[in-house]
Image (tube, rainbow, N blue to C red; front, side):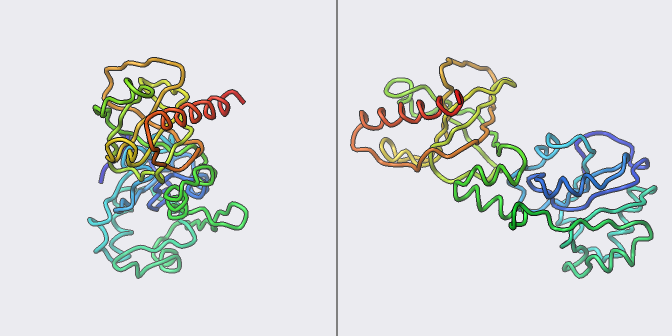
Length: 277
């Protein structure tokens, strides 16, 4: 068990329990049902790729506590509740989603939670956008399909990844436009293509156009690259963040560098138009 910040667990009177990957609008409905001494209990699963680990902490001011699933999945329902009560001795309210289950083999659900917990159990109904339920799995699907605007609408913010700045092939500066090359781990990578983005360097967001995919016209290698519009940026920072706004087009192979360069300029102009409007 770990947390983002130091806080007194013996003051916590309500908790929301879930995976909370994405900290999206559906999750926010659970957080809204907490009292003023609430905390978020995150059950960490292998699917933490929208907001890995500490990135959930940036999406809320409510204290978070993390429990790796592998360390608690063997517990019976009673044992899991005993653990929570031991951790939070003043616990009076538990907030969960409509499909919440817990304990070994997920044998315990809402009915059992209400029977086992002596305090208040608040169950939040499914949150929908029009007729579609807001779920992390749906957001992942949208990102994998390049439907960035739909994903962002469900998230309630623009999807963002973070990575290490690495050395690229060197053609951008010489033949095309200068880019930062980024190595990204843990995060789900959106569909291959070219995107309108904002790139955060040294805590400043800059309008940018970004590429994800194999450089099929040059060396064929996979890359994530971002070009800052109208600015020459240098940094001693080893990391940057890319915030995705809209997909411009799919990746495409060009017959020669001149055609690729023309398309890059079109992508830049389309991105500038987006930000100017």
